[in-house]
Image (cartoon, rainbow, N blue to C red; front, side, top):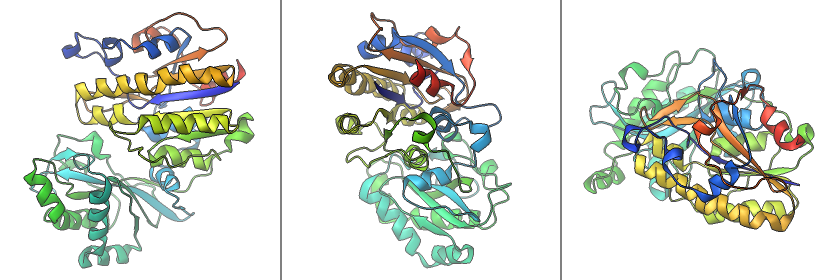
Length: 401
């Protein structure tokens, strides 16, 4: 038996007036989703009360953890996904290249949590040039602060200390709002780093050129998600299942690696709408053919489009999950024998607010031995089903049936 989990990040939503008071899932006609939706439906509390409704908490739950018991901040998970060790006595931070208005700190407005979608060589050049700035480097030295750069808008920073009491706001939660009420609290030395980053990046040639092209500038390093080291259970020892995780996002890869799952780097996987869906599908099938029994395929694009408030792009992202991941899996998996396929978001991401919501998520389990017919997979289709509330409930329902 093979087990496959397809996670369309943030694809669940509330009804939207522009869609005739329907959600994106309700507004679309998706053949692959409808085949999976004919299976066993359910709901899951992926973000328990008292924890932030985000992918860090949600994926801890999706991998079978009691998030309330193990949650210790977001950034150490992302660090693990980038191969960066966070040791006891250290605190890690997520560093976004973000876009704020020209007023700078503290009066600016957050324009984009991902610097207008900056990626590749431009993103890497900005963060490395920032680290080379004499004043910024001196501030880093004072804190014994180090940054692990990437070729995306997502970076990780680590320094000695403890995350307890630090108050730091995810930039995707305040898009369109003034940053003044959301600056770091009880995090000594962090705000000066952010302020200097704006001074450097706002006049960087890359950002000047971006603005000349009508693009947003990635003009600040926004620090958030402080956390300390994790000790997560081994997935294979817990469930007796060997598996892999296919994702472009360091957070998801980090949880997987901390739990002993294989999380390969897939060329062309960006975490955005233009991600290489076919490469991710091929990586998933290769893992199963090599002997893995479980694979999770994560598509970040619906969440990113929701944070951008872009309804048409969110609809297109969900279409691509269906046409380029789910439908091909339903065609190719029978070659490997019996299988169960789970389709779900990790959490709701609302176009109306451009941020996450802790509403229990819908899921559907397709079983190749029994599932027949078509039924739309939507939030409403699962609404009357009592929500699973144990961290390992979905995994055990998937594996033990």
